[in-house]
Amino acid sequence: MTQIDQAVDIREGEALDVAAVDRFMKQAIDGLAGEPTLRQYPGGASNLTYQVDYGDRSFVLRRPPFGHIAKSAHDMLREARVMQALKPVYPYVPSIVAICDDHSVLGCDFYVMERLQGIILRQDFPAGFELSEADTRRLCLNVIDKLVDLHRVDAKAAGLDALGKGPGYVQRQIGGWSSRFRKARTDDVGDFETVMAWLDAHQPADLAQVVIHNDFRFDNVVLNPDNPFEVIGVLDWEMATIGDPLMDLGNSLAYWIEADDEAPFQMLRRQPTHRPGMLTRKEVVAYYMERSGFHADRFDFYEIYGLFRLAVIIQQIYYRFYHGQTKDKRFAGFGHAANYLEQRCQRLIRESGL
Image (tube, rainbow, N blue to C red; front, top):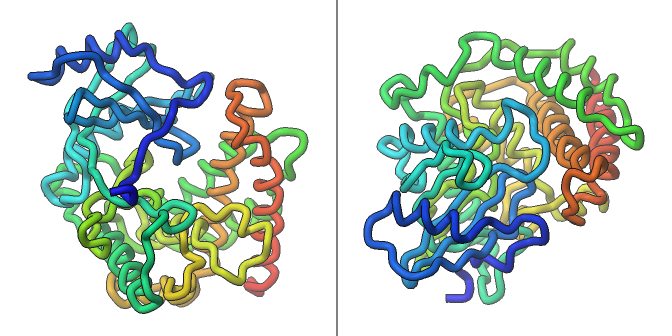
């Protein structure tokens, strides 16, 4: 089925040592024979994801980006172990097949997981995938429900409570992302100082301590190709932790671009939230609060935090491009994107009246 998400040719500068991959895979997984075929998934701007095929057996390999990266970032071993712990209580996590901490193989930590064959909704619906407005709304609600389900996971029973650092999650996030931005700032990007000062001054208390994904979007959700309303997988657990559920929702809504949003924001759209039938950001917040039981009188702080955090992620990637650590041309305009997000945050701060 052509709607099933497909890997493509590997980008320049991101090829793997096929022989090294082959040796590791055959040592770690029984019954593999022949030479592997490697392709790369086009989505994502952080960790790199490859499809590794041995005949009709298909796997996914995840590794950090090439070039210099922050010491605490792109922790493949942590991501794999979080997924292993979550799998029994949140069945949408792909199964881990093998983990490698031997840098003589690929020069980095990486892991291999099962490949979930399904539909991933990226910037728009794939060719031949059409839903009515009512069905689009049904799909949208089903996807939001999976975030609600994640926030209901018993972290202690899953053995994940150690991921958290206790009370003060909101404060740690504002301090941490502010520090990361200052370290990654380039001369052609604004300083975000007014935004960081506002976030620091308007921090709410932690609402709860739950398992959060920290990057929950449509393009990290896998749909059943035979029943596209059914979510069969949730991907990209790199930033999962124990934290505040509304901070997680704010992160997700930073990517939730509506049909009538202004043109610079539309340029950042990576998921089909502009389609007729998709909930608006306000409707997402109302539905999530109704279903989850978590509530805040105002969502301004969480929305602005999510946009600021997205700006920092974009700027960290742009820093690598600006300094020649990656040649990926997709990142050339990320400085402009960070500048736009600063302006958007400043406008939302003014409109909040806080």
